[in-house]
Image 1 (cartoon, rainbow, N blue to C red):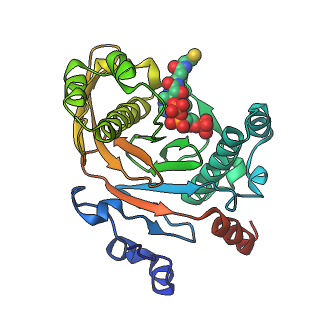
Image 2 (cartoon, rainbow, N blue to C red):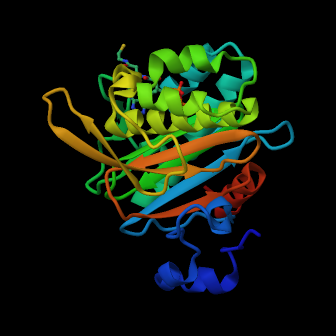
Length: 286
Ligand SMILES: CC(C)(COP(=O)(O)OP(=O)(O)OC[C@H]1O[C@@H](n2cnc3c(N)ncnc32)[C@H](O)[C@@H]1OP(=O)(O)O)[C@@H](O)C(=O)NCCC(=O)NCCS
């Protein structure tokens, strides 16, 4: 059951938000693991918290004013995408990102300057306050992770029944991960396990910032339900780096994972229907 955290009581008591809100600190075998909190307003970003926002693009839920939250270079980038779904995912995802960053940093969304690393990972370069974020989108589901301290990597993938999972796993997974996959007899189970392992790996590469330039077979993930589960990788100088993985259930035949460099940040999953986001912004006169 979803819990509405936008009640008047909540709005009045923003200071006591950590006690009021349903943060997920339990392992994933509880129902709360799957729970998305319904939000219809933007929330403050508390220290030690990882906010994971989900936006879903469907035919009847779009974000008509999203171009108003993009800088000209981002509008052209969106227009260069020929297929409508990737174009909308980028435009809406980037607009939502700017709105969330603007809210957390108390800056107008369009004033935020984003710069990409040589591997393409964007970060904010004109704020005195530190903020980490990461975006992922797949077939209309957009996930945005935000944190003040932790490095964040997120990944969401929709299950595609048409791909040869064993062929991909042979080149991208470690021998142990591959064995675990092959041991599953049900095709359905195997496909889900493949996507779990893939999203766990991609979330790590995105937290690290090297993306797929970090070979997926160079490190091992749990490839099983994960909740703040440690993963070890090496940076290019051979130094150990520790990340912590948690699974996400994005719903709608999709699988997801989030990686951070902190073992105990509180993960808060927030669902913001795009139609409500637009009307919330209009009400604010933003
Ligand atoms: C990052 C990467 C793993 C994303 O894969 P994907 O499944 O296609 O896409 P996702 O939807 O999960 O993520 C896309 C988002 O990741 C972010 N991103 C891009 N590069 C990233 C990186 N190196 N690390 C973390 N995040 C990155 C961007 O915000 C992007 O969102 P955008 O569309 O708003 O720009 C993949 O594109 C990659 O490996 N890129 C690195 C390429 C590289 O090494 N380039 C070097 C110069 S050629």
